[in-house]
Image 1 (tube, helix red, strand yellow):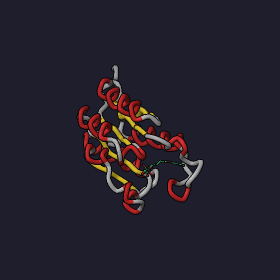
Image 2 (tube, helix red, strand yellow):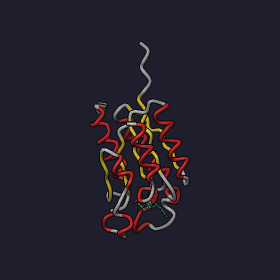
Image 3 (cartoon, rainbow, N blue to C red):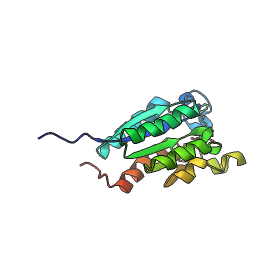
Image 4 (tube, protein in one colour):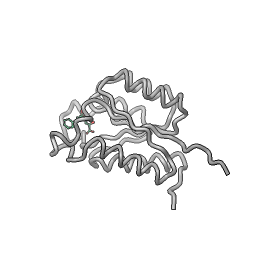
Length: 155
Ligand code: CA2
């Protein structure tokens, strides 16, 4: 019998996250962006979901990815907008506009860092926000998103 196509989640990483694993390991750990994306694909698969992973250093391209997620009928968004989290009303508006359940992730504990990192526009547009778990935050975020949308863990 033909199977329905797997539901897709978008995993969006913002500026400078392509540098993961190359510098500042004391803040961001040793894992690379490729490691993060593999973790996301593996975690999503455990819930019968497909993770479509994108990274951009450009605010407008991240907004385009959010619009694309809607066009592709994605069932969820995981977003680490990097420093744009703290500045971008446009990203906030894009997330609110598409009405796709979103979880914000930060690798570091933004509240234990400089005060300019304590506010997040993207957090306000997400149903949940995680920070300080290192890259494991992506796994936890996908697990929480799966629970929210009723995607069950596969045996
Ligand atoms: O903790 C996070 O995930 C952040 O979103 C990372 C952003 C930062 O601006 C946010 O306040 C918190 C920065 C990403 C930069 O990543 C680098 C990784 C390695 C080397 C240099 C930058």
